[in-house]
Amino acid sequence: MALLTAEGIARIAIPLLKRSLVLVNTVTMVPAAGFTGPNGETIQVRVRTPRSARTQSSRGAAITYDDQTEVSVDVTLAHLYDAYHITDEEATLDLEDFALQITEPQVASVATAAEDALADVMNALSADLSFAATATSADTEATILAAREALGEADVPAGGRFLAVSPSVATRFLSVDKFVKVNEAGGDSALRQAIIGSLYGFTVLESNGLTTDTAVAYHRSGFVFASKKPADPKGAVSSAAVSQDGINMRQIFQYDPDVLSDASVLSSFAGASAVYEDADDSTPADSYRWVKMDVSSS
Image 1 (cartoon, helix red, strand yellow):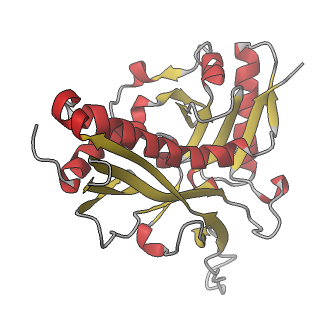
Image 2: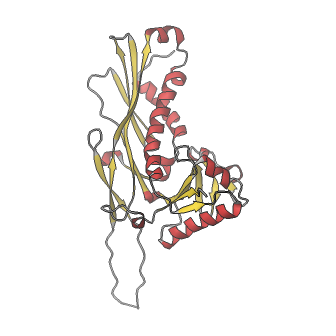
C-alpha cells in the first residue's frame, strides 16, 4: 500500500465526490470565497432575480433604466465531518485498499450529509399540489403541467428547471408514455447518473433525500447551497483540500499515539436555503421559484 498523506487521500476523494452528488448540482452555488464564519454561522447570500425587457414606446422616446434587483437569503452553515481511527492492527493485518475501505465511506458520508442539508430544506416546504392517491399517467401528467403553468405564470425562465422526485414518485413518472428516459436520451455525466428523464421542460432526477411520495419542481435560482472548507489546523501532520461539484472539504491525516492509531478526518461547512422574494416573511405566496408536490392521502 502506498504511503498515505492527506493530499493523496484528497485526490482519491474527488472522483468519489463526483459520484455522490445529485441535488446540489441543480441549485445556485455560493462561491466559497464569498463568506467566512465559525460553526453555525449564518451568512447572507444575494441572489439575482430575472430581468424583464421593456419596449420603446416610439422612435426616439425616452427609455427606462431598471436597477438590478437581488434577494437576500440567509444560509446557516453546519460543520459536517466523518472521523475514523485506523488502529495499528487494522493497518498491519486487515487493511488492503485504503481508498475502498476508508476514504470512500468517509467521503460518501460527508457528501450525503451536505446533500441532505438541501434535501431537508425541500422537505420542509408545504405542498402546493397533490398527485392522486392511485397513480395514473393522466394524473401524473396533469399535476406536472399544473406545476409548469405555475412557474410559467410567474415568469420563471424556461431553462434551468428541475423536478426532484422521491423514489416512489419516480415510479409514477416511469409509467408515463411521454416521459423521455435517460437511456433513450443518452448522456453519461455525473448528474446524468441521477437523472431519470425529462418531461414538459423539466429535467427529472431521483433523490433518496426527499421524503417518500414528494416532489419539487423548481428553477435553479429557487434554492442556494453553500459549502466551505474548514481552515487548515496548525497541529495537523498532514491536511489537504478536496473540492468537487460545489462541495469543499478538508482532509486531515495524522497519527494519534494515545490510541496507537492513524486518524483520518474529512469535514466541510455546508448549508442550504430556499429563496423567498421577501426575506422577512417566508410564506408560500412569497416565492415563485418552486412548486412542492405530494401524494394525496385519500
